[in-house]
Image (cartoon, rainbow, N blue to C red):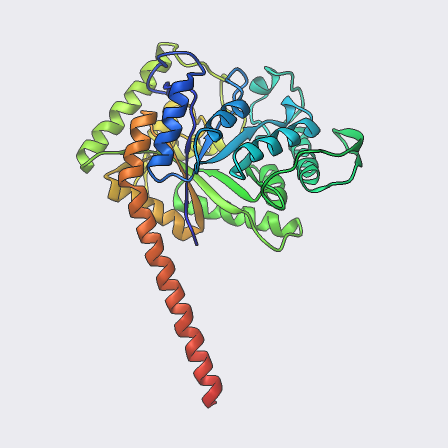
Length: 380
């Protein structure tokens, strides 16, 4: 199966290790970073969402209108706009990008961060709202006649959009989470299900949970699986581990100095972060290259487990996840621009080459089996 690489479309040069050098929306840097991804073999970049961050939709439109091939993953929280409005926004962006849009729906795993924009629903209520929201957006994208909706969270009458996506029947929907409620919602509605990087055994368990949820929802297909990491690469293993320890030191120092704004205090509320912390507490190194101190240093914030080693080591680690059934690999470094270029130059080609070999071997094995069965049938 094909493999895809997802990077980050940051709007400034700051990260967990480095303060940004300019405004929160640095137009020139945003374009430079996106172009680096397009020029170095990445398939798609994520425009993330934060309560006080630049609006990702116009930032995505800006990039889509200036680059020819890079695909867009737009993060969106259902609490910030009505689904009729959002569906038109997404369709318009798919038009601007000429069919390069995927929408990532975020339910929200922290009450404080949600409350910053007036969202007071409980976690379970948020998941119910997200499922209703996604269904409405899908229907607006694909329905050319006016319709009414009377749901738990949204009510409207006689609505029909006059703008439709380029992609038919609709753009893909992306969704993430590690709780049972997340599996149920994403298993029912997602085309791509997103996980944070965990040890292989735990990732396999989550994939099975997503598949089971899709089956329980009555689906005959299953979502594609995406897994996200923070790669730390260098020409030698020794240099990579030195870089990894410097990275954790920088993360800790910025947090101790109060230079990182927190979306929460105390233990995390969302299952994904709780899992990352538990994994980090159980050990620092897993499998081929997974390293947890980066996640521990951030309190399990977001995509924070690292893959450490030479480009070949990190590529082999990613292939281990591919062999589990993961075909969307998300990665971003701490030097956003430099790491995007290095990862694109030295890791992506190795993974693509090995995936092509695996696919060719599987195709050959399938042909051999088919040929054997045919001969048996003829001579039997």
